[in-house]
Image (cartoon, rainbow, N blue to C red; front, side, top):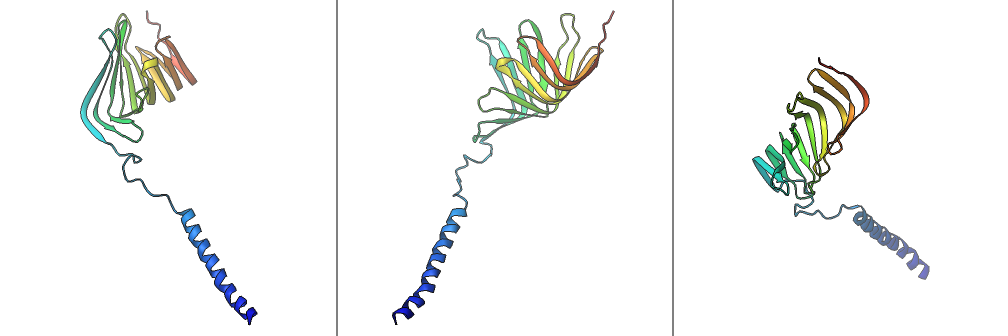
Length: 191
């Protein structure tokens, strides 16, 4: 009789072990609880239309100004998306440099800005120099270090001279300019 009881309890124990295993497996593969606070979503916490900001030097002169038709700030990574941005860099001893694009993103710490879609950089004519114009589809700017770079095709024109290549790095402080690959161009020496 004892054997009969053991053999009848075995299937019941097996079912309990399987049920516990199923319960554990369900909990192990279930997604973690969602954070509905909004901190982890990439939703803007504020939007500005037709805005502009200017960074002043320690002497009170404008170093650069940024304007756009629309700005969206995102709290999850503190980044800022800008629509139709226009960045103007001003230097005491040189003509202003104006950068325009379809869209831009400024990092959360403000240390860099990336411009996307029909990026045009213009150094105005002045001091006996022609206007310099650069076009590309992407440009990264690090304002504090005066750096600009891209890994996309770029075309640069100054007067009737033309230079094109893929990838570019410009250090405005050292005045070092480099096209990285597939470089070709024409240079007009003038008179």
